[in-house]
Image 1: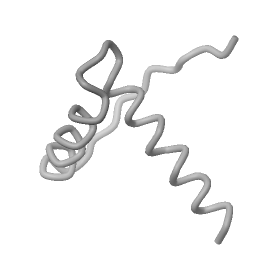
Image 2: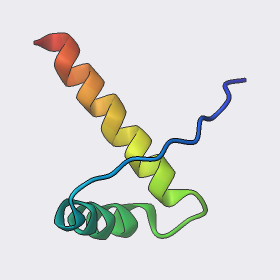
Image 3: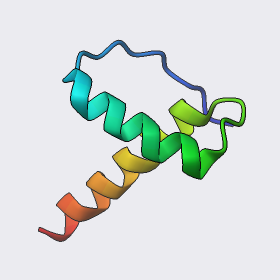
Amino acid sequence: MTRNRRVTISINNDIDLDFRKIASSKMLFKTGWYSKAIEEAMLLWIEKEKVN
């Protein structure tokens, strides 16, 4: 079982709004939708960087 870590970040408001619009429609506002979307985005970024 992995533990979750709480983090605080600061990002551009426009980027956050765009991300939330897309993520909320994909995740259907299910419990933890924002965390799940951020985690998915981070995993995609990690995979992309491993290839380069």
